[in-house]
Length: 218
Image 1 (cartoon, rainbow, N blue to C red):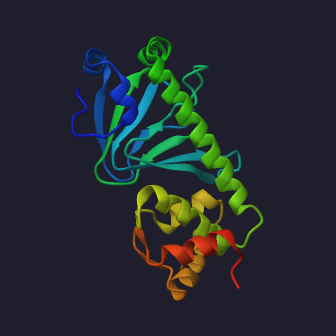
Image 2 (tube, helix red, strand yellow):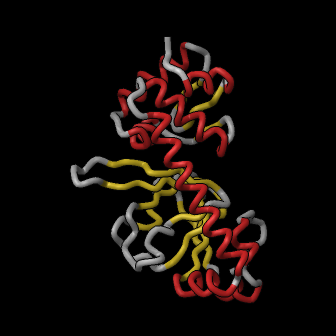
């Protein structure tokens, strides 16, 4: 199936004939699973439209959201190289969420035969690693309210001023309890930084949010 109408930079580097033969489009509703942790990595996923949370269940049973990805992003790449299972599950966050999928053997061939495709994969992986490292370092050892501000600031740079996440989603990203995140959001609301409503958080004052994301609250 063709990808007309969707803006996915990596797919623009795939030869048209290969794309027509290989790309499968699937649609999901909010909350639906796209793939499960430990399932075999059979191919590479592309977010065509909507939002996706990637979530890992630890040995203690706690869920950690390792990323929230939007249109144009790739998902499920970690196990492509060594044929291991998905290290985390993927869940649709919007209705609809539209995903593209290309089988592993096709992706491996493209990586070897289309130089620009291989370079873009490497760039995306480097960008993602840097994003994760910066996100972790900016939150370590800081008050929860500043950690929430840091996560919201980072997400707003990619998703805009309306962030479609629940308090539970944010708690999974930070690695804390929903009630703790709710209290932090109440404080940010009192400060005129955000408006929190069911299933979404609106950034009211981006400049002040950035300030709270980099410094400790008073």
